[in-house]
Image 1 (cartoon, rainbow, N blue to C red):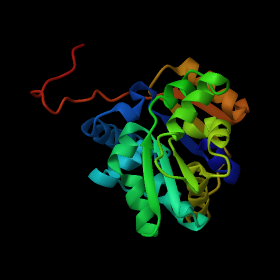
Image 2 (image 1 turned 60 degrees about the vertical axis):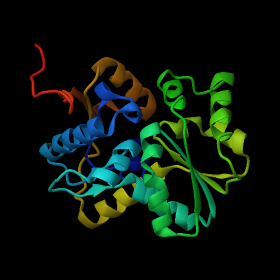
Image 3 (image 1 turned 180 degrees about the vertical axis):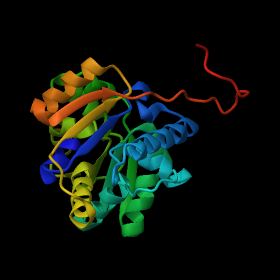
Image 4 (image 1 turned 180 degrees about the horizontal axis):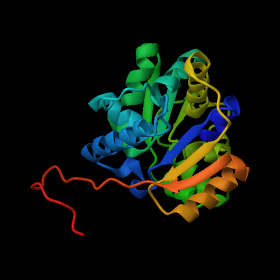
Amino acid sequence: MLRAVRALLPDEDIVYYADQAHVPYGDRTPDELVQLLAHNVAYLEARGVDAIVMGCNTSCAIAASRGWPATRVPILDLIAAAADDVAASGARRVGVIGTLATVGSGAYGRAIRACDPAIAVQEVAAPALVPLVESGLLSGPIARDAVAAACAKFAAPLDALVLACTHYPLLDAHFASALGDVVRIDPAQAQARRAAAFSGQHGVPGGGHIDYVTTGDLEPYRHAVAAIMQLAAEHATFATAPSLWLKDPNAAASSPVA
């Protein structure tokens, strides 16, 4: 997502916030996701951002059913951006592959059909793919076979497939091998165009600085980001942010044990 945004907005100052303390979001309960989304939005608002470019499909999926947290800044919805791209593609038979939470919400199907009710949508969960990407297994037979097994779950032929998890485009070569001529849609590209349009209307160009923030371990995050983004040190800083203590909605009110 960040690479797509940066390619279109090289001079914008960006706060890139990664809630690594609570991943994978796709395995979280709806109540947990609501808490995390509210915390993340509040953090970014407190940082003084002009807009929140949501890069998490699962967060957008829970917002589709539970609503977005109250905030003074606009939130650009990743699923809405992707649905516009699907409708523009002309595809009639569309597959969506994502996390358990995203697929279970049905948010993609609703958003796509809202753009064009004639589009037939199939949604398939592929939770096994996220750990592969997290562990760096992007090539070879393990990744290839896992993608092929996930694609085999679609019951009917497809014209297009939405890669509805930010991890999945890193496995694009395997999706291409498994699906042949099926058009693959990366929501990050549509979201980046929305961010660029917003910036053109409202933004004030900065110095192209990126503040990388994580709720997890800083050094592994620093190394991963540096490898992916090919950083120029003078245009980036790294920091940690407090992670949220998740409340159990079924438990009596209590405080975390120190």
